Every structure is written in structure tokens, then in C-alpha cells.
Amino acid sequence: MLSTKNIFLKDIIVWLLFPLVIGLITLSFIPGWSRFMIAWGVIYVVIYFFYSLFMEYKIQPEVIIYFVWVIWSLSGLFFILDMDIYIEMLIRVVQMGSLIFVVAGIVSLRKDPSLILAAFAIGGIILGLISFITGEFQTASNVESELQANSIAENANVFAYHLLFVIISLFYFWERLSGKFWRTLFIMIVVFTFWAIVLSGSRQGFVAVILFILLWFFNCKGKLVLQNPKTAVALILFITLFIFVMVQYILPETLLGERFIDQTKQSDSKRVKDYLDGLEMLKDYPIFGVGLDHFRVHSYTNTYSHSYYMEILVSTGIIGFILYFSIYVLLWQRLVRMKKASINKMEVYNISFIQTVLITILLIGLTRPLIVSKITTIFLGCAIGYSWALERSLRSEKV
Image (cartoon, rainbow, N blue to C red; front, side):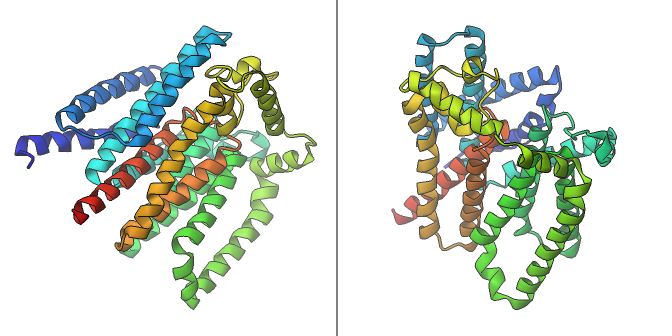
């Protein structure tokens, strides 16, 4: 039994993660504040580490594998060409590992992913509101301005990716809403967020939203919706209206549409060249890779690979690739087991929802390097912690 003092300490540690996550996806983009967020994060990780030792907390196997992968990446020291670039990336992947460790632990203590998803929603909405308050949102509405809205984020793709998680989070909470006011408010936020993604001009972000909604429908709600004729008709009408608006306005009247059209005119995609370039590097360094963040050192473009998979494969070799993505394999296997074992409808929905987001992330990873994406890392930790908590609860019930 936990004492009142220990329960109070646990609650403080849990709830301090909420503003930390919001800060990581907002303040960390602001010069000066980013250092503050790093310091805050380090202090929080240290506090949680000692708390976990005191509570004799078991670490999830995915977290252990991540740090084994980090250790394996040290082999790149024998092949790197730029020590500064390597050390900077090494620090960042260790930071991501610390995030996974903390988030997985906190979510497993709560047995609920809501805290993280609420932080995603609030942080993303803040980014969207900043773009509106500064006038960037309105200026980007004029296609002739050729401005991609990006708020205070690093670039338009990062901005759109964070807004994607606003929509993802709202879809999660929709199942828990009751009352027309809240549902109407959520619909308005989703519409505003989607339009902000359009104005960002991010093709990745736009496609990701459509992809997530389709996956969510088929994986989470498809059977229930199709069983209700009225809901099915309403869905068909909504899809028809969306296609009409997209064809009549979004594509011909926005910068996003122009960028899609320009992409179709290009005979050879830069993303394809990156993959081919990466495969050439892999031939020379198949086992250990070229070293963290050294794709851009060897690449003809001097940029990162634009691929989650190629960045890991080229940076840490075939063994590093297997280590890293075994995290997703282990997590997916646990989610499947828990989905089969659970009789609680909300738990089944949560698992299906997490699976949907993971598939979306892995598909986005085909054209986006997510190796040090804070929001991706935090969600991964959240999924690990929640599934771990479900599995431990199930085991305790059987004992």
C-alpha cells in the first residue's frame, strides 16, 4: 500500500508532465526558451528517475531496446566525418530516449493516455492561434502571397505535423464527449486546424490528415457506422461535400494545390533520389552505418534523408535498423494481445485508436525523418506505457 505522502508525490510527478509536454511542443521553438525547456526536461527526468528507483518500477522492454540502439549507434564513431554533427545528434537521441522513458512510465502509472493527448491538443491549438494572432494565417489565405503558415515552428511541415496531432487528439476525446456544446466546439477546432494545415502548404500534413481519418474510420468506427443507415448516409454526404470543396477550392485556390500540381509535373522526386542515395551509402557501411546524422554529410544535397527508415538504416546500419524498429514490433504485438484479451469497450477503442496513429506515423515516416521528433517520441512513449499498464493489470487479475 502506498502512503498518503507517496500518493501525493506520485500525483505531483504525473501532473508536472502535462505542462512539460505543452512546453516542448510550443516554447521549445522559441530561441532562449528552448534552453529553458531542455533544463526543465532534464530536471524532470532526474526527479522521475529517482522516484522510479524508490518505487522499484520496472522499465518496459521497448525503452530498454531504445537505449541499446543508442549504445549501438556509438559504433558510428569509427566512421564519422564530422564529430560536432554526430555529438549534437547523439545528445538529441538520448533526449528522445529520456522522453520515452518518462512518458511510458507516467502513462503506465495513470493507465490512461488522456493526459498526453490533452497536452497535444492544447499545444497544437496554441501554435495555430499564434499563426492567427500574428496575421500569418490570414496572409497565407491569399495564394498570391506564396506564404506557407508555420507559426513559430521550424518549418511548415513541422507546423502541420503538430496540427495533425490536434486532430488526432480530438478524435480520441470525441468518444468521451457528451452534449452538443462540446461536440460543436470540437468540430469548429477540427475545421480551423484542418484549414491551418491547408494554409501551411504542407502536402505531407494534408495527406496525413486524410490518411488518419480513413484509417480511424476503418479500424475504430467502420463496423458501427455502417450498421446505422442514417449515419452511413450522413457519412457519404460528408465525403461528397469534402471532395467537392477540395476540387473546387482547396486545390485550385491555395498554395497547397499549386504545390500538388507542381509535384505532378516533376519527373523525378527528390524523395526517391534520397532513397537511392541512401542505398548507395548502405552498400559501403551496411553493418554500422555512416553515423548519426551523417546522411547529410554523405548526401549530394547536404540535407537529411526525408525518411524515417532511411535515416535510421543509413545512420546505424542494418543491425541498428532492426533494433530500432523492433520497438514498434514489440509494441504492436502487445496491443494485439491486449485487444484480444480486453472485454472493456473503451479499452478496445483506445487500443484501436493507438494502432491507427502508429500506422499513420509509420506511413508518414516514408517521407519524413521522425528520429528526433518530440511529438512522435512522446506518443510512442504514451502507447508503450498504456499497453504495458493494460498487460500488467490483466496479469494481476489472473493471479
